[in-house]
Structures are given as structure tokens and as C-alpha cells.
Image (cartoon, rainbow, N blue to C red; front, side):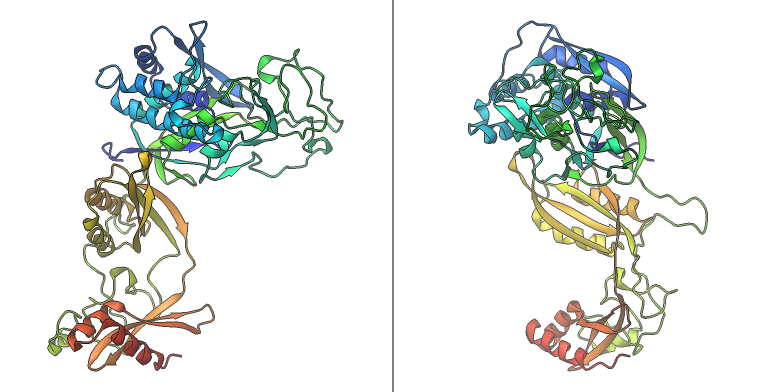
Length: 547
């Protein structure tokens, strides 16, 4: 794997996410916690100390990072004051610029979510718990760890947000709390039950015997959901007898205390539905959205490091962890002669298989009738639509399984995009397209997508990065349902027009479509409009006899 290829990451938040958990996972993946500490010391001197420990969560080893606050009364901060703190650090050698940019993006998301929740301008939002030193450390610490690992692109999993209700300063509120609900807009979420209940004991129903709650009392003001003491576990007591809910769990170990809505040793109030509790905190979700550009399954990467970060709560049956996989986009490489090559074809493949009418494919840009004497030059069909030599003439030479490459680009001259797409298709991509998006700070951008054959992703990604300037390309496998196609041609007013014929699973013709490039070329030669030429070509295609 080329070490110069930008690193990518996959954030597994299927058990929830909190700021301290993500920071711990990144440290476990190789980030230098001492280096993270130096950045925090430069921004808020003598205020916090990171402490690392190895713990067990649901039978899995994980890293736990605790933040010790060294001052008695940390100030509440507004988004404006946090932004000033970060901006004033620009240019200082001990505070990397990229860490500042990432932290600003994360805090900006938090401010927007909290402001929208409470109906105040973002700059006036008092973060309280988030602005307090421990959570400030989580955000800046995770951003610095991310920078250290050299991650340029990332994908995040479906997000488990939890369920039930919690008590906060504003009263009894549902999970996900308002800020998390807003931060998760557009991101796939689940209440927390990734797998259906197994039902291996009668007592395993979703009743009060399942201790799923946050071990932290939500008593702060504007911000609902602290990163300390999250419960991401799911207890399955192995007994057929009902498990009572105690009036207090104070006698339990600190890491096992808590249950649905249990705060300060009190039972779930009568008439309040139980639930898993809060699995995702605003800080954790803001980090996920600020660092991972897309949501989806794990992309195909050559994993170089794995980090497992633990939350405070430990409940058997559901490890309370965030996982981060860090690596580089996987590129298949040839291992021996006869194996799949990673190189894309530099020229369009040429088929010698006979067509329905054995046409001679003329250059549509040439008005010289003699051009047809050049033989079967397949210039009118895209390379990705030509039948392979070893396939029957009515088969479409594209696989049902392919790889989809994509990248977000916000700084390319829009006049260059058509040629980028053409080059990808000319190089053998099965398809290529653009989707307009909005990126951080509201900048307009596009996501470029390219569908390629497996084994061709390396050169295709290199071409995409070279032509667009993007620093990373995401990749995931897709499965397709494809109708078989064959190609023939019709003659309209002396001009040859290629026709694509699609068949259903029963072999019946479901569509006859003239190739528009041939239509456009013929229209130029005949001096008529493309619309008129297309109508003529469709009429001729409808008269084709196909069995």
C-alpha cells in the first residue's frame, strides 16, 4: 500500500458515541496522548489532565481516557468565546492549524444545534457542560488525535442514539435529547437495538430489569448530555426469575450503577416508560458529523490501526465502546500472471463478436461515407457498454458487483467537470456522475461518483484525485440488478444509428433506444435538429425485428 495515499477511517458508532469514547479510540489507534495534552495545555494551561487506562467493556479490552479537571470553577463559555480562543491560537507552533479548523467545525455544529433548540443566535449559546473544561478537552483532544493519525476522509456507521427519557435541567425529556436529534438530521440512526432480541430467557424482555441508563445526572443548563458516564450497555440477566429493580443501586460498583432514568439512586418514576437510555451525546455526535463526511457501511480499506474507546458504563451483553478503523483505500494489485490486473484499459476494448446485423461502426464525426470502410471501429459506444470478446453478443459486459468511488470537491472550476467525467468513462468506468452538496461553512460543492469494476479502483481513484485535486477517495461495494443488452443499428437517411436493445429476465425486449451520440452526429450531417433526428431514429428502431 502506497504510504503517500491519504488515510481514511471508519467510525463504528453502533453502540453510541461520546466525546471521551472517540478520543480514547483514536488514542488506542496510535494517537499520542502526550501530544494531545500539549495542545490542551497551550490553549487552557493548567486546567485539565488526561489519564489513560485499559479497561474491559462487555468482555472486550478497550482504552478509557478520563479528563481530570484541575480548577474548581471552570467558566461557562459561549460559542463566540470558544471561537475566539481557537482563532487566537492560529500561527502558534504548539497548536496545529488543522486541529483548530476541525474543532471550529465541531463546535460550530454544536452551537447551531443548541441555538436552534433554544431559539437563540448561535453566538449567544452558553455551552455550559460542553464549554466546561472536560468537554472542551474531549472536542479539541479528539480533533488533535484525528490530525495526528493523518485521516483525511472518513465514513461513519449508523448511529445508536438510545431510547427512553432522561431528566435534564429543563425537565423530563425524550432520548435522543434535542441537540442530538438536530445534529443527527440527515444521518441514519437507530434507537439502540441493532440486533433483535434473542429471547433466550423469559426475563429478557424490555422491562425495568434492563439497566440501560446514563450514570450522569443531566442537571446542566443549555446542554443536554455529558460525555462522562454514558451507559451503552444492554444487560441480559441469565436467569428465568424476574430481576427486581432496586430502590437504589448505590451499593453497586460505580461502573455498573444506573438504570433507565435512574439518577441519584431513585427508581424509574411511575408512568415513565423505560428505555436503553442516552447512548449518543451532543459532543459525540458533533464530532462524528464534523469528522466523517458520509454515513454508510465500512468502505474497503487496508486497515493499519484499530482503536477501541470505552465509555464509563459497563453492562454485560453490549460492549460500551466506539471503534475506529484507520487505513488507506484498498487497491487490488496483480500478484501473478493471469490474475486480475488493477490497471484500467487505456483504450476501449474492441469486440469481434458478430452483432445482430454485423454492422460496420463508422465514426459519427466524419461526413465521409468512406469512413465505413475502415472496419469495426467502436467509436460510437462508450467503452463500458461494449460486449467483451468472451461473452455472447447479447450480453452486457458489466458485472453485477462493482465498486463505487466518491469524493467531495469544493474548489474545482465547474467548467472542468465535463472532461473529468469523460476521462473516467474513457478509462473504463461503468458510470460517472456529479451530485451537488453543501459542505462546512455552507460552501457549495459536488460529490463526484464513479462506478468501476473490481480491480480497477486503484487507477480510477488516482485519476479522480489527479483531475480534481481531492486528497482522498471513499469506496464501497455495490450490487446491481442489470438487464441484458445487445446492440444493433438502423439506417436513417443514409446515416447509421446504433441501437441498444434491453431484455427482461424472460428474454422479451423491453426497450429499444438509439445511441444519442449517433443521433447528434447524424443530425449535424443532415442539417436537421437533434429532436427531429431522434424521432426518426426511434421510429426506425421500433420497426426492428428482434426475437
